[in-house]
Length: 128
Length: 262
Picture 1 (spheres, rainbow over the protein chains, first blue to last red):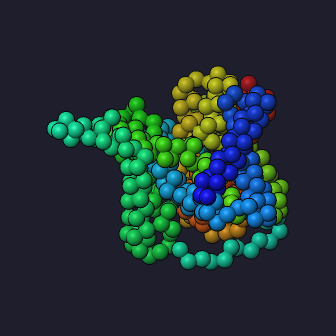
Picture 2: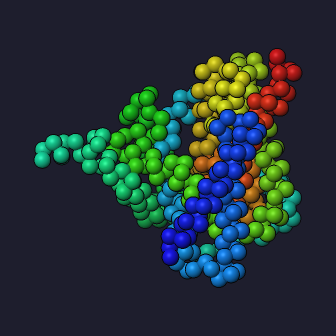
Picture 3: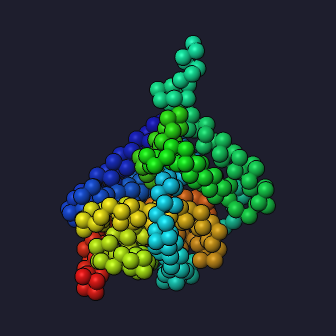
């Protein structure tokens, strides 16, 4: 059933977020969630792999998960539409420079640091 | 009958009550326009989702102009579009980001784990010190203000968290939020354009990218507009970044500034 896929996702999400909240509390960060979604993602990978090995993860359940992962871009578009763009512009030059320079220099980190993991093949081209 | 039509667009009216459903229609329309009109117009140089994100940001800006200084949520501040705030809010965003992990390659994650961690540490420190230096140039020469604005250049959540911990003044906190939002918007828009230049075309690079940039919304949108298959790798690291920033900015990184700027 499709809902089973969603239920598994929900369980992973709740477990991960809870763990992230606990980690935040233990580190003394009031209200901060440390890696909650990251843990949830790991749980989802591990749980679905296990279930697939045992042939317990049906096609319908899978389609529930796949629906959400293709729903991701529309959610991101909605997220962009609710950003506080005014606040970004109102900060003036100091905020603009801090934001822009901080971003540009971090972009430059990507190439040298990713070569640490050895040479990586680009993903194959795909038709949209 | 007349009342029904006259309140249709207002709070508790037709569109407000159908908020989430109407949001599906709005986002669908934005994406249709991006893929069918903008992509051919720009000769297929950029992904449709990149246009959709930019259009959404412009709408957020326009809504902010319309609503005035009380506005904080872009188009979500307008009653009839309040469903967008639910659809694009943290709960749906995190649920959708997480679902992209399905089918991600665990071996890739392990292989690039160290690079991702290093990127997070260096990326946080770099954004922090650059932000602090800019703050100093603009006359914020005390360690607390420098640290708060520097933390804002980390992400727009780390900024106010650091500001609150260090008791920074509210105008400095506002500046730090602005710096963080600029970063997040910039990452959304610029990533697809420079992806080739920085070698962002494989899972390993996406992991490093997620660690270096950190802003969850920026990374999520930037990677989506570059190649959706990279999203899980970048997003997974990025979700640790804000927590890490909240941990080190008001403590270790602040103390290093305090030594020199008191």
